[in-house]
Image 1: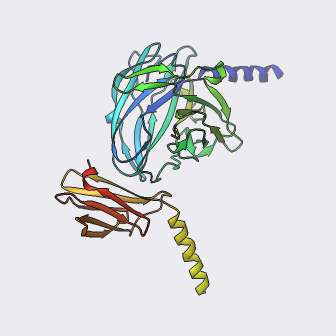
Image 2: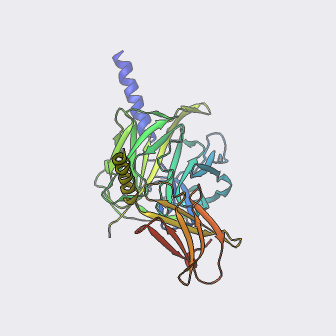
Length: 273
Length: 100
């Protein structure tokens, strides 16, 4: 019995490690717009701090073709608009390799919050023989009126923000609740990473790294939610920070293989200058 | 009774005045402009006064709709769109700054 518990723990540990440090980016250079304008996104599946490997979005174990994005939409003033047709395939160049990614444009002219939700196809992680699907939220705001940022969308895996993700000063903090289909996920395991490079929107590539991590645990920071699925993280530096609740989603299998269905949310902290 | 009403009015006005008035306008590309109004706490601007000024005179007066917005024909020449939620809570946007 003891052995079973131990081996279960070991398996859990291996599973958690396997899905580590991957982040689905839904990136646009400014999350708090002074006024409405057309904005551009890069949708890249990468390791945003170390930039050690750029994954091919939609990679499958049984086909050379990439599976298409399942859903991409925006919600503004409670109105949902499908944006899947705006996605264009690109090859995004990371520091070590290039990967299949997407670019898209969106006319963010209405005031308030625009909540973008990306549900990519599960990605086959060959090293671990598992699939990873990161349901990702990026929230931008036009002109400063809050409208939809705190909406709970009932996603299979979701981080519901309690702090406006686009209105955080450097050295401020971010609080969120991990949920799955509207139910809290107690003690959820959360990874936190900083986009440690400039994203070149023109050349679809990552720039030079900004900061060195003193040790591996600073590259991908692991935190846990409390019993209510809630967590808070202090933001040490201005820029973009990603939060990923590992395996929070209700789907556990894809194409007969284990699936880690994660919830990702992005925030941007602004410097005081 | 009167005291109670006065008190609740005072609270209502102080909570309104703690927020910043916000307006954002865009050109619909069909000869009309839409302006959206709001407050920094997300409260509705429905019923708030709105006007277009040209050479210091109001040439168009309206109130923000249920959706906190107003659509009007684009005036020729320079103009200002004014969101008027009371003293200290007015937002002016120059017509030349309103783009698609």
